[in-house]
Image (cartoon, rainbow, N blue to C red; front, side, top):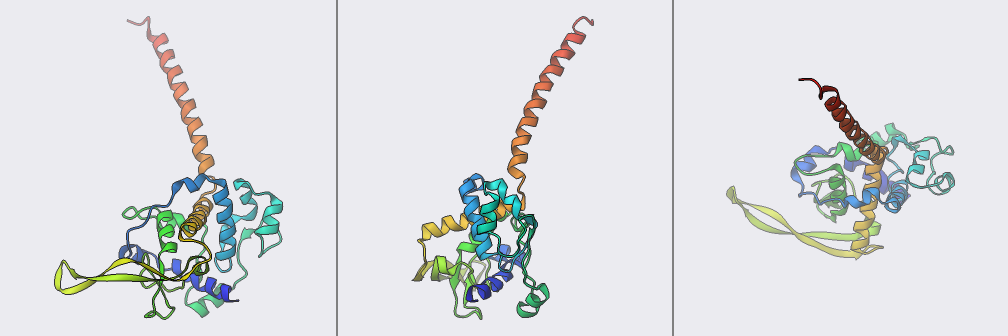
Length: 256
């Protein structure tokens, strides 16, 4: 029940969006090699089901599509399906949207294309944002929920992965505002670990990267297949360009 409540609160993180990109820190780069790592995608799917699908839906994604990342139908049914019995069903949750809005003030957003929706040309890709966001939570006793986030200042939800990451506080230095000498600004100076997590910091970063890789894949499952097909199409077009060029030369060679 405790994890369910935390997961429900976690839904609020993705609701407001644009202002966080403007006020937060620069985004870290998501390790793009994860995008084509089958093991990472499979682990990310497991993380998504356990930490996100309690309240977030992915209504544009069907469970049987997970076969595209190397999972068998039995693996999907036995390890990843908790809200339905049919492997062809979409990843919906049984949580009533009306109740969630009444309890938390907003309906948990669908995460099917969350990575694509969070891209910002001035900051980075949607994968960069979510990778940064999930790794920059810290304890903040001044907030009602007890948490804050560097990438999303004044976030309205607690850290959904705090058991893995542990609890930490952020240190800030006060500096003069370069635009107004009468004001001071708080500059982030680092984190201080308060309680340890279940895994090391390096393992946590890797875990978040796996989850983001899956979210990125889920937003466009056919992306890699389309890319591979596109390479072949370009090769065929290149071949026919050469053929057309030689035919044109042969046709006009006797014309003066």
